[in-house]
Length: 214
Ligand code: AP5
Ligand code: MG
Ligand code: ZN
View 1: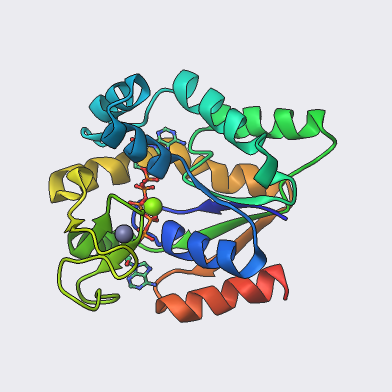
View 2 (view 1 turned 45 degrees about the vertical axis):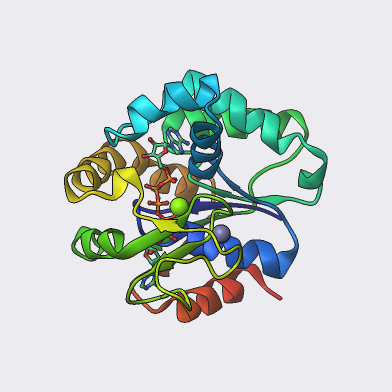
């Protein structure tokens, strides 16, 4: 099963993608997580990506598309995957469609997690992330057992550099300009599914499971 998560920054794509990956036994591929791992590791890719990410801008397609294509051709992707944060531009979507077509394949579901901008800003300010293992928490809606410490790996939790309110607003603008058109793109492809992302995390997940099937 090949699934794409669509939605604004902070809509809950990562939260739901992790649950989907666990339930259906497919890898969760987040371009944002790959970039953050590279930044942490001090790689050349990471340095390039950081300058764009910290400003709330997209990393250029030339960098992102090749990176994602390499990833989906790895062995663990044979039975499918859930993509979180890719595609984010029409050229990215077209590259993905073409690459899959070349293998006689296609995306099965594009799940749009719909959350209005008003809800987003408050969610982001409360998010805490573990840079070591990628786990995500929220101080109010999904608090870790011990404040500031990752339940899974025990590392310190941080506020992401791009979760400051000014940057969140910039990311929302970029989303509306460059990523929202993908909703129409996947509607035309006949694979778009919408879920109400303002519900609590577990209810959103149940709505997604109802779409994907057991
Ligand atoms: P990326 O890491 O993908 O960030 P994003 O899309 O901005 O999305 P987020 O990770 O911020 O939000 P999310 O939807 O995953 O929400 P989450 O589940 O964490 O990308 C970062 C940057 O990398 C981009 O700005 C760009 O520069 C670059 N980049 C990445 N991919 C790229 C690409 N393809 N092309 C170019 N550049 C790219 O949830 C948010 C918070 O809300 C959490 O605290 C969570 O606990 C809480 N929450 C989740 N669901 C609920 C709920 N139902 N109710 C209450 N709280 C909830
Ligand atoms: Mg995310
Ligand atoms: Zn952790």
